[in-house]
Length: 219
Image (cartoon, rainbow, N blue to C red; front, side, top):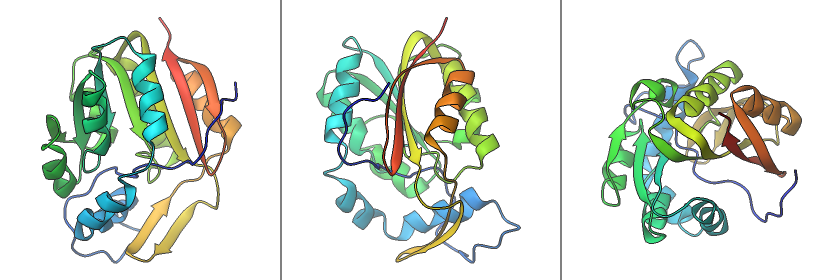
């Protein structure tokens, strides 16, 4: 189930509320603490990541009949929303970061939403495809497993999923040039099994620093 790939890593964009008070207190929600960091440098983040993932988007867009309804789950500033629209698809975005949401709305309808609650945001079976490009990297393992199940519920039978997350390094807090974030690191086999158990048939896996899973909803 290995498929060819080049560079891994997309937009790590699950949720935030403000850019304030970023002391990374471990008694606080690591997701909120981590992703609050993105707010202050949102424009620089968008510029840095603008050229990335073009081949993955093309591949996912071609995997679906046109037009299909795609949810960009953790859409960040909306880079891939614009790309999927250019390929003839209908797109919706969700992200909890209000700065990213405002930017993404220039490309497609986007709402502020915690991915850990995304299953309550839309009716079951709404989407033909869900694109989750590095948007689960700050979630705990149990939260990721739960969100994968919510993704399965939001997809129509036969719907397609792309999801990638961090598979190199170690789980824990990481001090980065723009701030401190929590990352959960998965093993490739462990994550592939989690996707399968959430209700998907795994079509292929691209290994690398970010493990990338392409899957189809069973049913």
